[in-house]
Length: 129
Image 1 (cartoon, rainbow, N blue to C red):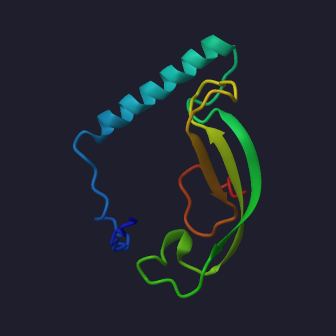
Image 2: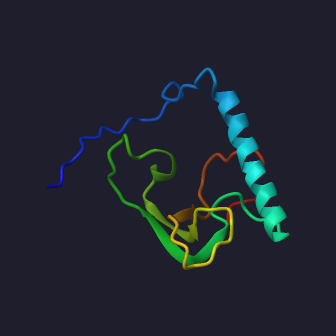
């Protein structure tokens, strides 16, 4: 039997996200772990590769469409205005090691929507496509 969850989207405001008291320490530990993975995979392979999702299985050209008449709680950020954008999808496996394809691991998918209007993160002004 399939059950449905009732989810009520929340319109984003700055007070929605609250930093946990130990968030800086958690971020530092994650960064240390990622660097450690990179160092280990470099030692093993002699090549600098991603800490996770190192092995690509495919890149796909895609189109991303925001539909008209979204409810206000959904029509925010990237979804604020209806329209179509070009996108790229990357398929990968999750480990940082470049494992043989016969090794079963979880798969990952990343979506990059190109030429999105609006404010950008510091240092990303040139990364529009």
